[in-house]
Amino acid sequence: MASVIGGEAAFIGSLTELIELNWSTVDALAAALARMSRPGDKSRLASFLHDHERHLEVLAALAHELGDPPMDSGVRPKLKSKALTNGMVGDRAILEAMRHYEEDSCAAYERMISFREGLSDRARDVLRHSLAIERRHRDWFTEQLDSRQGLLLLPL
Image (cartoon, rainbow, N blue to C red):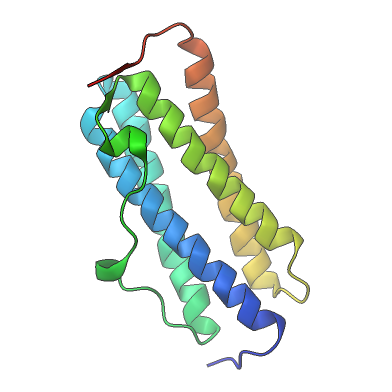
C-alpha cells in the first residue's frame, strides 16, 4: 500500500469524487437506456455505459494502489438528474441530460490532469485515456443534439 502524504491525499479526494461522478453517470445511462426510443441510440448508450463501468474498475484499482479502498457499489450516490428522474420525456431531453454528465466528466478529468503535480505516469495515463473516451461521448451527444434541432420537449 502506498503512503498518502501531501498532494496524494488531495488526489485521492478528487479521485473519490471522480468515482462518484462515474457511478452517477452509470445510473443516468441505465435510466436513459430505458427511455430512449431509437435502437441506434440505445446501442450507443449501452456502449457508453460499458465505458463508464470500465472507468470505475480502473479508477477503483488506482484508488486501491494509493491506499484508499474503492467505494462499495451498494453505497454509491444516487441519480441526481432531474431530466431522468422527474419525468422528462423525449430523446432530445435525455440526450441533453446525458451531455451534461459527459461535460462534467470531461471537466473533472481535465482538472485532475492539469492540477496534480507529482502525478504518477500510470495515473496520468489512466486519466488521459478516460478523458479521451469522455470527449468522444460528449461529442456524440452534441452531434446528436445538433442534428435534432427543433424537437419539442414536453414534461409529463
